[in-house]
Amino acid sequence: MCNVCGCGTGETTIGGKAVVNDEHGHEHGAHFHVHADGTSHDHDHTHDHEHSHSHESTQGEHRHYHLHEAGSAHEHFHTHHDHTHDHQHAYGHTHEATVHYGLGPAGAHAPGMSQSRMVKIEQDILSKNDGYANENRGYLAEHGIFALNLVSSPGSGKTTLLVKSISALNGSVPLAVIEGDQQTDNDAARIRATGAPALQINTGKGCHLDAFMVGKAMQQLGLQDDSLLLIENVGNLVCPASFDLGEAHKVAILSVTEGEDKPLKYPDMFRASDLMLLNKCDLLPYLTFDADLAIANARRVNPDIKVIRISATSSEGMDEWLDWIKAGCSKAIDRKSIDSY
Amino acid sequence: MHEMSLAEGVLQLIEDSSKKEHFSHVKTVWLEIGELAGVEVEAMRFCFDAVVRDSIAHDAKLVVIETPGQAWCLHCAEVVHVNALFDACPKCGSHQVQVTGGNEMRVKELDVE
Image 1 (cartoon, rainbow over the protein chains, first blue to last red):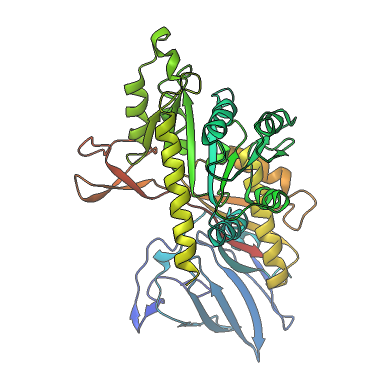
Image 2 (image 1 turned 30 degrees about the vertical axis):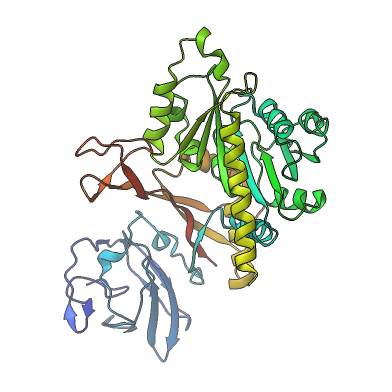
């Protein structure tokens, strides 16, 4: 049995039954304790499980609280001189539920350093972004706005495709565009030339748009109800995959001048997208690009991805793409009227 | 440098939590990073060290728990292990697999004082 916490074999109980746990190893060497009442004792230990200790002295009796990884806690008492331990578990747990990470806080169990405690967080790293994305999504839903997040590598023809799409829609759907690039407002200027309102976000050193930036841009643009919002992300097939902007769909654009294996090289993006536009299809006769293979690769990563072969130059596939957009817009408007009841 | 944004997100969660839980020093940070989360753990460590400088977590140890990629194979009707998003089912070779786990990236807990 361990003289520090009494957690050795045969001491741990669940519902009064002993729990044998060979993994709960301790090594005993020189270890110096100073307790709250000023008394001290020496002994060695290293724990190969993680828990934090706090000591409270109650008339020569020491109370320990342990917080384990799994969120379980136990409490035990030991008297100072004979180091007998009594375990009380807040609720049943085995030490096997504890995740072991080598030396933990026990290694930092230095004199006077007994304030340490564990704080459970259990929060997604992207939770902040996701919170903003949900706000955006709520606003868009409330106003019947269908938003698309267009993602691709640089040079896939996103902006040209947008310009063509906006011209082809020819005012049938009110729309606005948010352009993301590291620098310059060239793209927004190209969109504005079509007559559509466009706002450029320069991310500076950033490699993606995030939901906060898009939320701000949405406010600034003053979006119309029952409209279409096209968000052209920074040309990057990696990072934008992780950042939800509040859009209805991510649309990945892959041009036939790239490699067929791009969906396999950048799987996160093709997995996160609901639609893939295979762009620049007018060039296929001049290339060795295998369109079927590219589509098969995209489906390996995302079996549900919809694919449209398209060309901004020859207008191939344009009708299918615009129909898909219009269907999405109608759905967003329908949903708004359902929700408002 | 998408890991940089993530590291900043981690620091933000830590700072938010320090206000709620009243601590001033973070000794250890446990992150759970799934095999399929698209996060490069080494890059994450590098960025974390850079981001936490001059913060309450300036000398915090970063412990990364890597969770395995899991997917539901429609053909085998069971959960199988996958190493990448486009992996075929290791049992039947089918690509009709839906990822069910291993794409998490979260801050699990902190050792603080």
